[in-house]
Image (cartoon, rainbow, N blue to C red; front, side):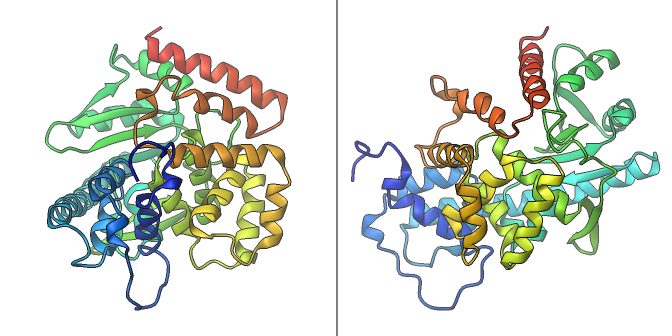
Length: 368
């Protein structure tokens, strides 16, 4: 099938293949041969797809040998090897930062990245992690900024000013700032809260329940506890309307092997933590792609009875399954990221906060 008529990837053979590469990276499956109708696959298109969704490592490891063209195999091998090397680099750099922050008495947690990879996947080195996400107490912002500068990092977002007041003002309107270091390709995203809207999962912070995750060679890093991590990943994906398959795979992988009762409990706890419909959207999307709610018809039915949940699900499916491109590359491509958050909660104070927050983040981008 040509490009014409493929308004979304749901009509393609490549998108289901990408989903299966993810699923086989976390779910149990038998040793039966994986039959791929290779003549139906546009392999150049598939390579472009997995690159965009940042799942090259999963495709490299899970696709059966000899079933794909040599040029595509080599490209995936190169990408997968680069991802694995990057994971080791991120682990070592995370350990260095943890030591520095701990010595300075600045508590921190690692969000997503290598900790999530180790919790969710059988071979975590294959999970692409572009950034190191650090969560700190807002009161420690200036201390953390000083520690990052002393560690060789420079502030890249915001760019206009490096003054303490400017950084504080930026963080009052945005949840994170971005820092880079010349000696590595890594970027640190420094978070003072876990969601742009401070009324969403407001009680999740650096002092929330945590768990320690062994990443490599006996090195352990702290991250959010299981309940908080579930709620955070749902909100994180929802904020971008799940336009990358990697995020949906991470969420589904974290739930792999959990029974219906435990998923029910995690969802109920996410509502107590203030995740609202973002958690419903995450569960329904993971179910649509990976069958996360198989055997849990009651919860699926409960979530689908809510019209707003169905609207959020449909928009997420449309975003994740369209032709690969950044939302900023399309006319009005970021519009869903602006209107869907208003559905996450029905409370008027939340929606007023969302209006104020979006206006503040626009001021940040414009440099006001």
